[in-house]
Length: 103
Image (tube, rainbow, N blue to C red; front, side):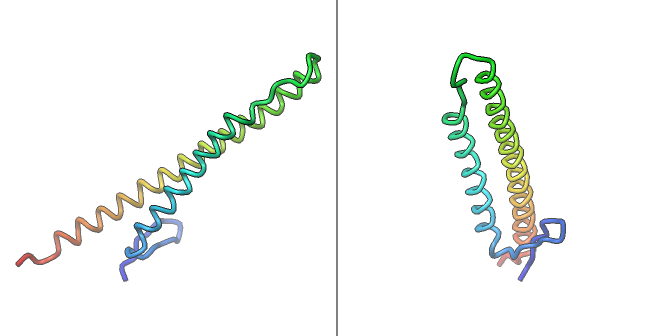
């Protein structure tokens, strides 16, 4: 079976490449949903009107922002991998099509 080299010592059978792409896309979509929920539900308002409440809210919102940045970075990494795998699949299919005898 033909293998698609993903780099870093990883490869995948061409027969499994579409399922692999789908799994990557599903994972990216899940990260995106998590990001949306986080942005909507986790913004912290100060529990009071004192300096400690303000500091608490700032700290918690900073952590939430760090999660958002981490999430976006993982989504970008996944999208880059998806694009690379799709491009490699398309190159393989193009070469295979060009090498197929036509009757």
